[in-house]
Length: 253
Figure 1 (spheres, rainbow, N blue to C red):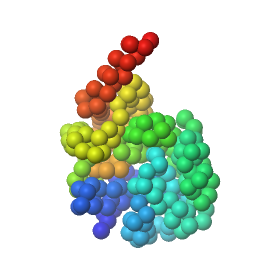
Figure 2: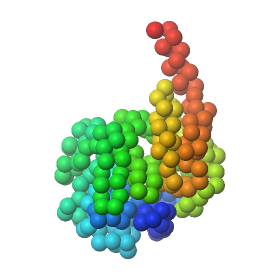
Figure 3: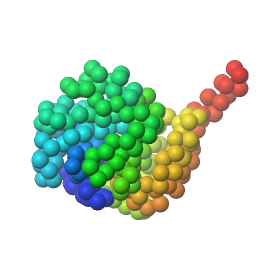
Figure 4: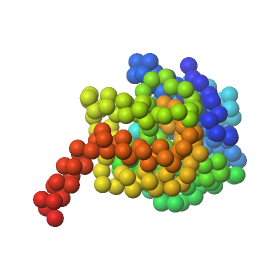
């Protein structure tokens, strides 16, 4: 089953909860002259997501399929969407287009560099590269400047079947999720390095109104503050890795 919620004007969160993983997989359809789907989803979820999208628009009208980084829940079903929507193209980072989409996608992807703008009608998306945040060399996020929605992928990941949108604290649930992964085979899910704080503060400076998260609740409280506070949480959980990096640099100036 899926749930659909409008988390910002014409921004629809399509959520599928998988009890076996205790995890929501969220996909965002943005209505405009050229509709954008952010997160293509897993291949095995494609029939369910297609059914959900059909309740909102004709899927053949999708023009852009965006994602942060190369991972099956982000873009596993990309080619299925490209086959349904004849004019659709993937949109991703320049690195992602070069090293992944050039071989994976059935049509060439639109490669975005820092601060490139994708206009889809009334909406403008600014691309911000965030390598290794949340993870992946090719990672980046898209900031919709009209309604100020940050499509932020795995940032603020929360386990469990969460509410669609909240202005309550989500950092404690996010920290709990990171600690859960740190204790198991998915450790180092989100690396913390010498550039993490700079990237999070850059996103905070955009002053988003809504954070559209891949796993867990989207957020519409003080988004700039929670992005800055995320640095403290990540540093607390993963900071020993940064300390090791700094020690090595001190040994080898």
